[in-house]
Length: 428
Ligand code: PMP
Image (tube, rainbow, N blue to C red; front, side, top):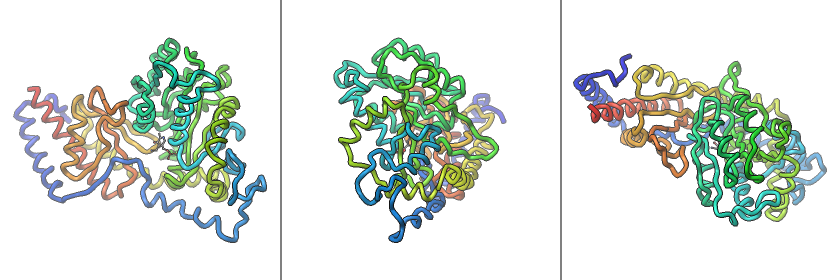
């Protein structure tokens, strides 16, 4: 295929009118499609319906500790849920605390606690003139929303195929004591689907922060969310790695079963060193008498153990894989070689990240909307919603049906082509 840039003005104009006709045809269908949200589809939710039957009015509702899960008690999670999530998060059972239904909530609380009470005895962040976080970009908008909410200054760190630019991370973290954290989605990252390489994880574990209360916010939301059985990414376990490097307290690891069982009705957990967990429990025991143990019991009895969970994830993969294939194959067929966009083919997670020519992302999202396709707003993958190149677009293929996704991808590709042609014509 000839790159668009090499086409003459006349050729571009001719192509434009042909594509515009195609676009008008799709537009006339009055479609209503959504590729904006990383939500599991109904078919995926149906996979976990058996969970509704594991607890009945006849069930023994005592957990292994002998506590009646219908009642108060057991602050940081019942033993069987801890074991399940500890195995899922690849950490010892004693280094985990189970929370409620959302890991994002735990991350918010973690930042909030650091603001008001400090981290393990250090000055509360609210008493400091400046608090900063490093934000690998593109990244997860809800992370950035938390730090923005607390007035924390966010610094962009570009992602590479191996994870965040570690030269920059090392340089900034070791020189600026106002930098208190970094947001990381280390496996099948949101939105690029990148897994941090061994070297990257080693470099994280070896960081020498200027701030004693610097923490890595390791949000391993997609730890077991593979698409393929034979091609899977591997991520080094960070808690143990930090311990080995003499930095046991430097990381908080977050995860949940949101995209394993039910988003919003799963269980979330934090894994950290003993000292960090002691600090966390101090707030937790004031904040709650305990989380939903019936839900913890339901999850533990339904999955039985990590093997049950891994088998379950294969069923999710069978539903997700064809959807990723549709988007990626269409991109390959329609866009490869045109020089108007690039993308990665992730081996897991929930997203595909697309980079258009600079200055085109907002226009592409707006164009797609004209034809009834809702995309994640351009810029959402950057702090303050500001993509300096206006080029990154997050694609979430999970929710639409396969048929809807075919149409949605077609609209997206047409939008990319049309906006790119306009951009190139403007420069001719
Ligand atoms: N972290 C990442 C990277 C996510 O993509 C999501 C869900 N979109 C979450 C956290 C939210 O997880 P939870 O439902 O546990 O709050």
